[in-house]
Image (cartoon, rainbow, N blue to C red):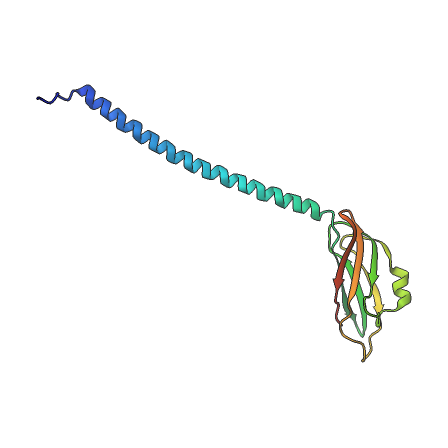
Length: 157
């Protein structure tokens, strides 16, 4: 039996088959990279959406805190709002006894109708040698995100 001679057409067909296989391989690799890129963009969009939702929620929340401030020889309790929303009906409660704040000053200022963002209110503190250093307090307030928020703070002298 004799082998069939290879013609120019057979060579061109074989070359076309090789080029077709290479093009299919390259397209498959490109599509895989494209899929990874799309998946990454989808994850990024989800993260950005979650961040925007958290920021929108944070824009409705007040963030209250309290601490003692020394002014010369005197002390003051400073209650502040670092949040992005006003705090309404701000209440100050003492789970233990209130031994350093003047009761009439507390009664005159609290409950506070509105504590705007970046605003604070100060109460006069009377400190003596036998005054304990830590004073637990409970802050309660309402804001645009809901009612009866509560935070325990432990300001120290």
